[in-house]
Amino acid sequence: MKKDIIRYKFKKKSVSLVTRFMTIPNGMKIEKDIILHPGAALIVPFLSADKVVILRQYRSVFNQYLYEFPAGTLEPGEKFAACARREIMEEAGYAAGKLTRVGHIYPVPGYSDEIIVIYKAEKLIARKEVGDADEVIEPVIVSRAQLKKLFKDGKIIDGKTIAGLAFCGLLS
Image (tube, rainbow, N blue to C red; front, side, top):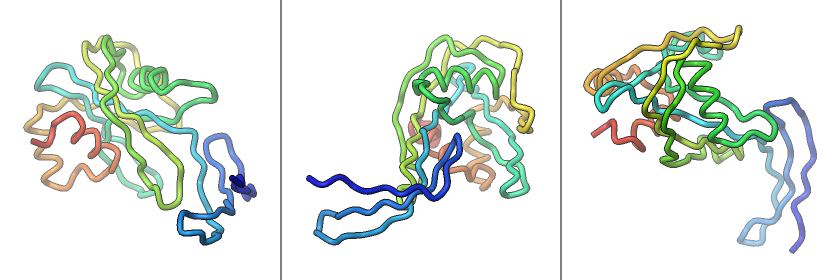
């Protein structure tokens, strides 16, 4: 089997844009622009069975605040679970006493190979937030009912967060 040929157009630490020359299952030869991504972890932090931590985070791409669960991109050589533990501490200010992998998603499979692994975090221990200087984040503690209302009112529109809600049974 012939290997695909990849030509880099742009390469950075967190993403690369490449053109991939390949043959698809129907035999057609195609040229596809793809964003290569190292992967990411999303964490659904449970303080109790009824209380979760969600972030109100400023997103400069949209020039607005979004409600999201903590998430972040893997560092070189980092495992998904280690990324999840680092991100929940940096963004929400908690360490996870128990971290359970509940699923994964391909957020934009039409043009990227990104995979986001979703974790449920329990037995949280408050820690000092580290945070990144270029992030504006406010952790908010909400009940399941408040979370459902945020979703139903169209306040939670981030795809990975909606997937986290579904994987953890927070929409039913």
